Image 1 (spheres, rainbow, N blue to C red):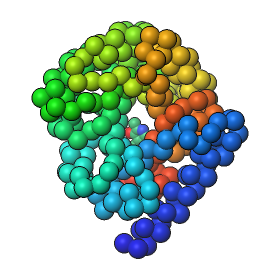
Image 2 (cartoon, helix red, strand yellow):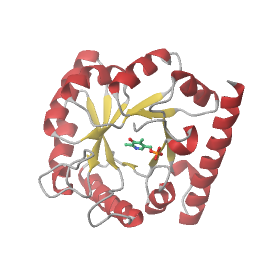
Image 3 (cartoon, protein in one colour):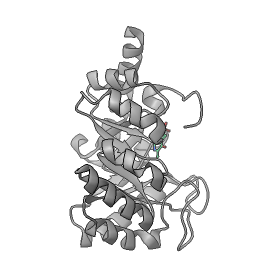
Length: 239
Ligand SMILES: *Cc1c(COP(=O)(O)O)cnc(C)c1O
């Protein structure tokens, strides 16, 4: 356990250094960027160690794993972010522990999340997940709405009881015009964020950047980076 704590502390320090350098290079204040540690596939004991080490934001992508982990860590002051593709039959469970759902990508999900949040008497933060490689009117392979669908979804979230529109999320696309061009992808996201904020000034979160491309995201203006591997290690299986 002590070894694991040291390992996590070392990795966290390295990620912290990367974020600080990226902020400095971009002329941004360190406080402008929040680190969210993606704990998927790793046990609740790791979440506990991360909390001891100062982490306050964690993310999960599968309800089956996240629900028991959040339960096991319910005594800790942590914000739980849900970042995976979300089926409507899991929404009730997710709404019971998640503080922010970052993967809102269709109207049906907005309705389901709203009902569940109202029933649970909780307010759920929502990010619209944008698929930069999706064609107009479709969703991406890894979830996310095509850019032309952002406005409609944002309006629906903003009007839905129990939901709070917090901003946008993206995963840098592996295919399409932005493949291998993370910086350009994240800059495009910042443009979408500007237009979103014109109508919804409080929706100022931009969640972008992971272990491999957090510098590009911070450089472009992301407010939140989601880092798994660089903190916890290479995942034993795809998660
Ligand atoms: C797993 C995951 C991450 C973290 O990815 P790493 O490359 O391990 O840092 C970030 N965002 C989402 C949506 C994920 O599923």
